[in-house]
Amino acid sequence: MVEGFLTTHVLDTARGVPAAGLRITLDRVAGPSRERLAEVVTNADGRTDGPILPRERFAPGLYELTFHAGDYLRGTGARLSDPAFLDEIPIRFGMEAGHYHVPLLLSPFGYSTYRGS
Image 1 (cartoon, rainbow, N blue to C red):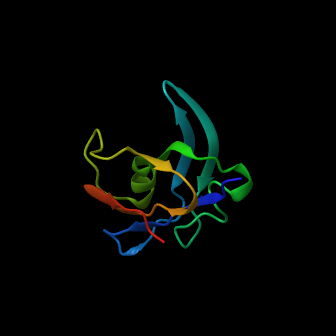
Image 2: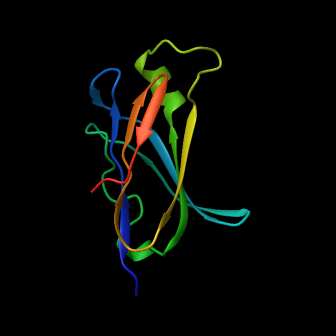
């Protein structure tokens, strides 16, 4: 059995704080089909209360995290264009085994991500 799990951490780099209250969805992607595995909201530390994909639900494959940044940014009172430059941020990546940590550094006009530890 292959073991793994997925976590994230979202930081609001424009305000210099964790991005609390940001909604995130996780889908498993296989060709044209998608399976919704999780929908979570970040806590006061910009993290989820547990792994987005826990060990017991892990399987190697292609996944997509979608960070609902537009809703979060509007909620902070950020001045956004209409339509907002960033709304939903999908990040598609493959997982083989082990701990995958996919952080998001966010501002109203840019973001970055990487495989963390």
